[in-house]
Amino acid sequence: MGQAYGVVLYAHFHIYSTMRQAYGVVRKVIVEYKLQPDAIVSPHFCAPYPIELGIVRKVITITDGNFAVTDVNGNLLFKVKEPLFSLSDKRILLDASDTPILTLRENRVSLHDRWQVFRGKSTDQSDLVYTLKRSSMIQLMKPKLDVFLAHNKEMKECDFHVKGSWIDRSCVVYAGKSDVIVAQMHKKHTAQSILIGKSNFSVTVYPNVDFAFIVSLIVILDDINREDSED
Image: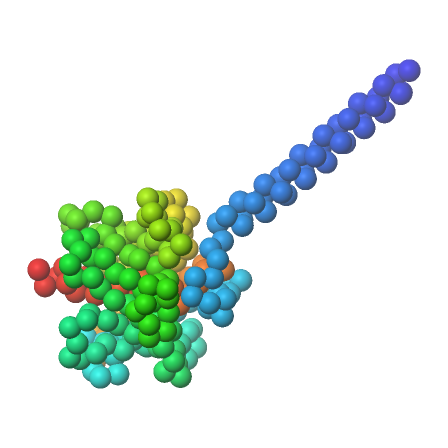
């Protein structure tokens, strides 16, 4: 009787442990899935491992743009084209072969520094990728920005948010309103970069996060910072 009772208890404990383990695995899968953003621009720009990007911003803008984005080996990935004489406030993110990836357009009428980002060279609402705006009108030195993907029509809750100090190159991109980091900047000045009029910094993009999307955020952040410094 005692042995049979012990066997039943062991069986119940084994089933309970197995169920707990199974629940833990399922819960882990669900949580990881929720924390992994889908490809926003293209799956081509997502990797299952962290991506380190080097960004060089030239202080003096030339016709070929003032941004160059490279991988850790110095290979060019993106550059930014800024029309020299344009009232539309557009920036075009190009890949290394000069193919337009995204068009970034500022809405100067908005009080919240609203930007809209579109696929390719389009500015049609059907090609909208996301909208970015300040979380509030009054912000000092450390911009707080909310990002709403195209499908988020009501824009009640952001899909990503950005905060930190641009001057210190310590801006961080978070998923939704959470504390889950998807990308962050690091300052990387060198004596040579200062002499030739360039500002260097790097960006760590976390696994499964669209790095073309992150680069477009950095370009907008830089523009907002320049506007703030001119005010």
